Length: 190
Image: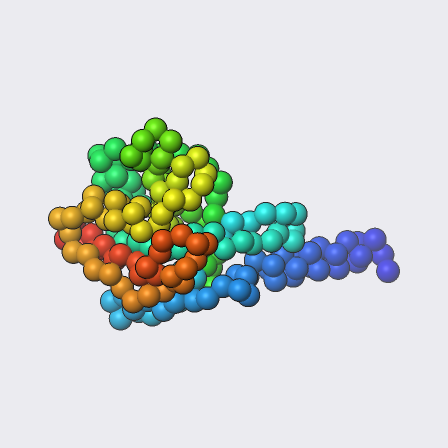
């Protein structure tokens, strides 16, 4: 074998392994979302990647608890900025939507009830949907998903909202979570 053949083989092997390890963790559950006649399969939990880049480990992190319809991340950011939310640079997370691994497109925070608390949301864009994972934290200690979901949804009280079917575990990470995402349809704001 020539050196070029060996290098070619190793390159192909590396690419195959990278593709194999980009798939969602086997422990993930999936939810089906019906939007305007289209079925969208997604993982209702964000994942955080750690470890060696070629063979990363993925850890389920936060539940998807807000789903925006008929909008973009930019539209949501504009509304949230007008209501006291601020951009933040924090560790990236991913969401599996269909067969794609989607990196969060935006992260924002809003001050909580005291100087130690804050609301933190990660937004993931897919077609005309934006999936949100929002939580209330003190430092980096999780306090509540439900309180954060309610706080974020209140910002959009002038648009159509509803709770969807249960998509996540209720007793996830020993923190308050009803398992239902709030759907917020921004079609009427355009």
